[in-house]
Structures are given as structure tokens and as C-alpha cells.
Image (cartoon, rainbow, N blue to C red; front, side):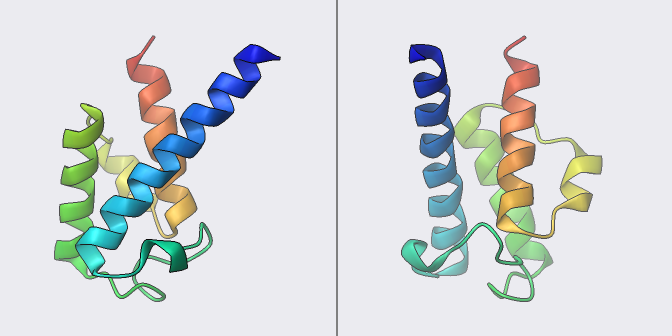
Length: 92
């Protein structure tokens, strides 16, 4: 049970960091960002914003998000999932 709690806590922490990066880049209130929001259509990101978000995530988490994964990202939850997947792989 303690392991599950730790994993959940870490996931929530990562979600907050990703949301903060999106908020800071797009000048959107972090509290208004929801996992289902589309980065371009709902939050107003353009290609330069998306690149900045990915670069900031790479630097913050000391990872490199795979290009093929980034190309599939449409929603905030997609981006978070890719971050979590990449972190999991990089820690093995």
C-alpha cells in the first residue's frame, strides 16, 4: 500500500510540474488547465509553444521525450502520459 501511495504522490507531483510548465509557457492560469484540454485548440498553443514546452520538460525532468511520442500529443493528458512513460523507461 505504501508503494502505491508513493507512486500516486510522484505522479501528482509530475502532473503539477507539467501543468506549471504549460501554464508558464502559454500564460494560462494553471488552475484552469485540465487533463482533457487540447493544447492547440483549447489552450492556444502554436508550434513554437509546443517546442518550448517539450524543451522545458526535457530540461526539468532530465529526460528526452521521444520525437515520435511528441508528434502524437494532442491533450495535456497525452503529454503527462508521455512524460511518465519516458521517466519510467529512463529509470530502468
